[in-house]
Image 1 (cartoon, rainbow, N blue to C red):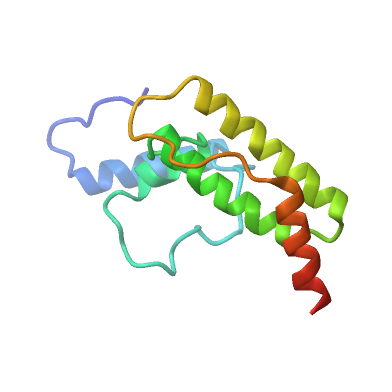
Image 2: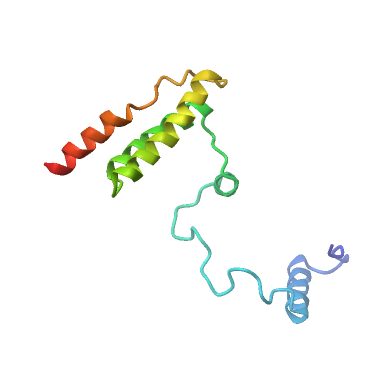
Amino acid sequence: MTERKPPGVSFESWVDKQIREAEQRGDFAGLPGIGRPLPGLDRPYDEMWWLKEKLRREHVSVLPPALALRKEAEDALAAAEAAPTEAGARRILTEINKKISAMLFRPPPGPPLGIKPYDVEQVLARRRTAREG
């Protein structure tokens, strides 16, 4: 904890003194990210940058669980169709189907899921056709 600003000292000079003393003590030496540019400097200013960054770091979804799973299912289908092997595509589809089935049996709060598990064989057949032609 730092000390309080003494009366009669300008705020700027007091802050400058605090920073200079901290530098002399080596408080700024070895900080993570030293020498690298600050992330996001090239983006336009966003008042909620700190909240968005916190949510991203904590892997928190702002979507209701059903909508988040719908998005995950769409991404999984695209990943399965682009997978380099059929075994990889099958694994991706099997994993997302487990999540979809679990949510169908215990519906979360919010809007209904509105999707059903993928027919793995049908998706793989469509994938094979797309890759052949």
